[in-house]
Length: 251
Ligand SMILES: Nc1ncnc2c1ncn2[C@@H]1O[C@H](COP(=O)(O)OP(=O)(O)OP(=O)(O)O)[C@@H](O)[C@H]1O
Image (cartoon, helix red, strand yellow):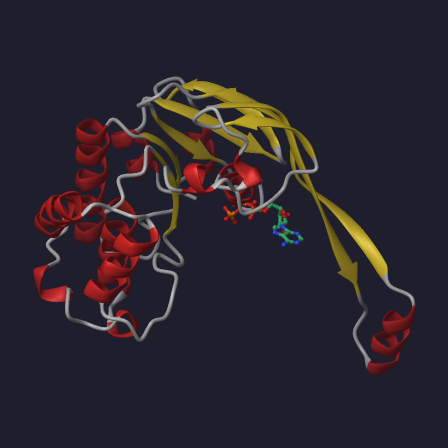
């Protein structure tokens, strides 16, 4: 994966409070430009697990959305698996995944976990034997047996995260963007998830870019860390030499 001079400026409408301002802004719209990501440059090698850290609003989620093809950047270049992410080629989307801890499962919440998994099988054209093998492995690693016939809407946050990972990983993405995977989880669930991610990365050889505000996640999973502050890369190196968490605490 290579990212060169990546930039993203959002154009957000500005509106003051009150009815008069609302009417005025319907006629004359004013916009504010927000530089979310600026001149971002880094390379990731295949199979690396890299931490992507920084304070709230630094631009981490925006970067992940660009690299997973959800957003079109306003500047710069990126190649992931030899492709330009925002072209959203079917072949590209089949090989990558973005999992957000705040929203681990997309799609209708009325479906059961098993239905959602089957839906992925169809969507990602996973051959039956592969689907069966991948599923069996994920069910065991994520302790999913009792969740398969449950509706997504009725799952707790921790259960939703486990199910969300299975739904994503069942198609074996080669590149995984994990955005705050342990957010809101209790200590035991977070530790189990970290063990799973570490094991999955080694066994699948997937490249993982992971954001987290928790030092334990980054320390236990990532030798290398990229620190982004105010939309720019401030540090790219070993976790051992990073002083961000000492300075900022577990944010
Ligand atoms: N859709 C949007 N429209 C306008 N501004 C946005 C939009 N999404 C994000 N931003 C702004 O872009 C900046 C970067 O946001 P982003 O979500 O990428 O940060 P982050 O590093 O992931 O933060 P956090 O740690 O809080 O999740 C912030 O100033 C945010 O307010």
